[in-house]
Image 1 (cartoon, rainbow, N blue to C red):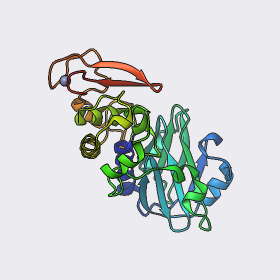
Image 2 (image 1 turned 90 degrees about the vertical axis):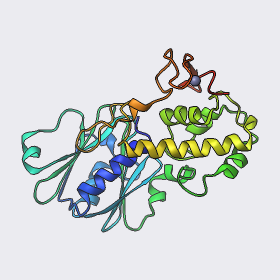
Image 3 (image 1 turned 45 degrees about the vertical axis):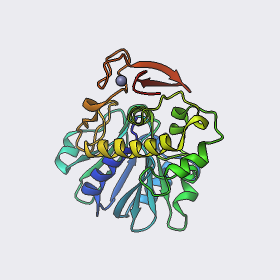
Image 4 (image 1 turned 135 degrees about the vertical axis):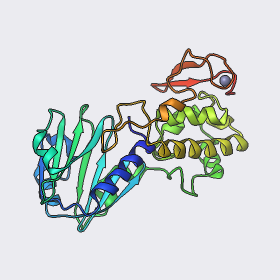
Length: 281
Ligand SMILES: [Zn+2]
């Protein structure tokens, strides 16, 4: 599942490849790819046709294209991915059965959206609406991990009365935007905190370490082009390489890279968690 670093990698690829992209034609293959209400696939296609992409932004795991009029929102969910095809490749490669949306510019260059699991969503935001009005999920997002508002004081304030395990809290997009299972496990390892620890038990110094660890782990993964854990691909179909550096994620039963003890694995809040029993307390 793409998390913040993967979505950021996609954003950078889209910005590089599609800034100035003129949407001349749109084809929606599966209605479910378009979030409704308020817009059906026809409304989506009509809204985007004739628009030009000015820039791409990311908020949590949402991608938002600023158009010359209005906006275009995308959430990759589990398996959504964009592919860029030059005109010749676009003609030679007909859409596969997982292709959900195709967009072409006047020179027949194509931006193709593929989604095997079919949970991804897109939104057309008309100029008279704010992005938050149409993409309501944005209203519930907590601060970005890199924002100054995401600091130890904020975490203390939000977590001091919570009995939830810290791992579960980190996955809550309302606490901090963009973090998923991989980076929650990896940052808890880096901060030396066990995933099961109730939030209210965490000391100020631990929260300080956690905030720093999270930022560091995310930055490192963005630098590496996203992870290899999922079937994540960037616009050119390349896999990132953070996987080679994982300390605990999906390493249950294997020796800790730091101390040699066996990494443990358990299900917490419905998600698998991985930690080292001697490096994390
Ligand atoms: Zn260890």
